[in-house]
Amino acid sequence: MRACYRGRYGRHGIAPEPPDGSRIRPQSGFLAGSAPSTGRRFAGNAAGRIHFFRNNAHNFVPDDTNEGGTTMRRVVFNQKGGVGKSTIACNLAAISAQKGKRTLVVDLDPQGNSTQYLLGNGAEQPDVTLADFFEQSLTFRLEPRKTVEFAAATPFERLSVLPSHPSLEELQGKLESRYKIYKLREALDEVAADFDQVFIDTPPALNFFTRSALIAADACLIPFDCDEFSRHALYALLANAEEIRADHNGRLEVEGIVVNQYQPRANLPQKVVQELIDEGLPVLQPFLSASVRIKESHELARPMIHLDPRHKLTQEFVALYENLGSRKERPGAA
Ligand SMILES: Nc1ncnc2c1ncn2[C@@H]1O[C@H](COP(=O)(O)OP(=O)(O)OP(=O)(O)O)[C@@H](O)[C@H]1O
Ligand SMILES: [Mg+2]
Image (cartoon, rainbow, N blue to C red; front, side, top):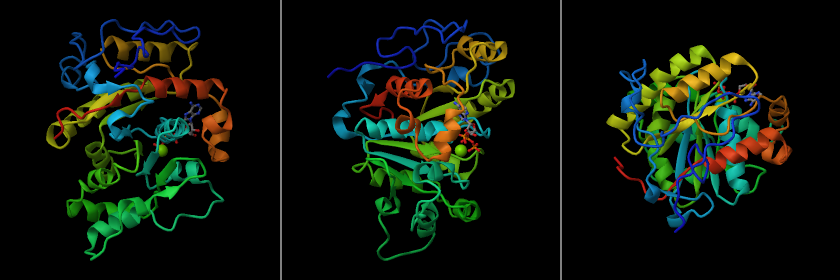
């Protein structure tokens, strides 16, 4: 088995060239376990206890093999709005499907942006959605529908979506009071044989749906928009992920921070990202550029790999996808 870690330093573990014009210094030494204590504000806080993807070769296989057939489930989460969660979830999922993986996007956001991105505006609305799935969990049925029956095929080969619906918002209270927080995890266990990769898009909040997603996932990707406020929000987010890991999902690991809409020539984004790196946080490479092409991609409901495979941002998404680990086993499963 060609096992190797392909984390933030790429498949050969080599620090990449800094992005155009950037003076970012990737930190040496970070790859594993929990973040090193840096003596900075994060050290006494959550960072020293956060579980990041480990550099344990036996935990990883290259993405293009899927040896063992284990589904990899990733949640894309940041409670801050508009940082690129849906964009990143859908584009990574589209690349995964294009590379031959049976891929599922779970759209847990009642706004339904991922659903719209993948199914299109004009397309027929799906007959059943995640709202039906959750409603089913609230009612007794002799013959409940299987989870896979709630998934809709997208126009893209091997790519399906568990679509969102605005009524998810109203359902939340009921689901919470009836302790349905593990339903998504059970549903994803049920479809493990049907999909190789799952990407879960979440709403901009820490609520029932995002907690369900963190409980159901193996790995968490955190989009980051290079803003000073976002950096502060990040620490609370990491602490929340750690709490979920401790209480509900021992296999959840923070795979990394995805820097989005990065402007290499502006000083502030460089400074903010450098601080994250210096604090020992797992900042994934490459950083995603800002591009107006993404708006077109949303409007046409065509992920970048289908709209413009040669575009710089598409290439960055592909490189990011290739830098993600794929786990063969689930060590420490709860
Ligand atoms: N790399 C990028 N370049 C340019 N624009 C981008 C990029 N990534 C995202 N955007 C834009 O930023 C906006 C927010 O993106 P997106 O909807 O993916 O964020 P989100 O975190 O899912 O938002 P929400 O919290 O509302 O669900 C969109 O208008 C999108 O087109
Ligand atoms: Mg979104």
